[in-house]
Image (cartoon, rainbow, N blue to C red; front, side):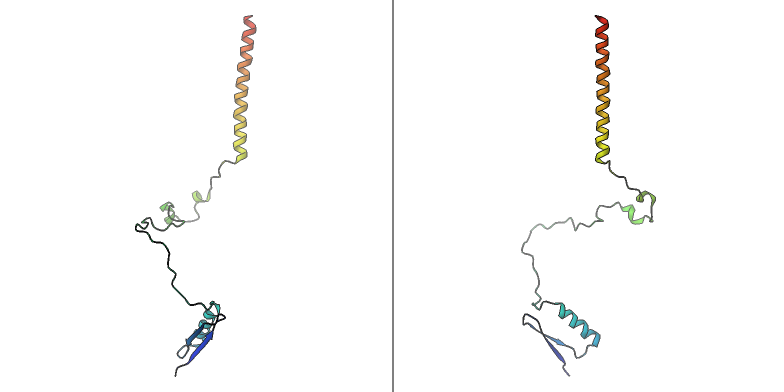
Length: 122
């Protein structure tokens, strides 16, 4: 016995589904699959470009350049748990200001000693 089910999509395309030897669960799965489809014919998508020298580098993944010892490390690991935070912009500016102050203080001392030296020679 041939038991077929004809389904009509919104766009008018008709799909025939043979349900003769399928269980109720399989029929429900097919109906759900077809319900979620647009009704357009399934076509193979092809790329529109071609290269004579394809890349031999392989596909990049987030794990491509990781250190191999991470694969055998038992977690949690104290060394991996600590993250070295980069120097903040505020700390960088404060350090620059301290360097400028040190340079300014050195120049002021040098100028003061030169003035003292020039006064004593007069």
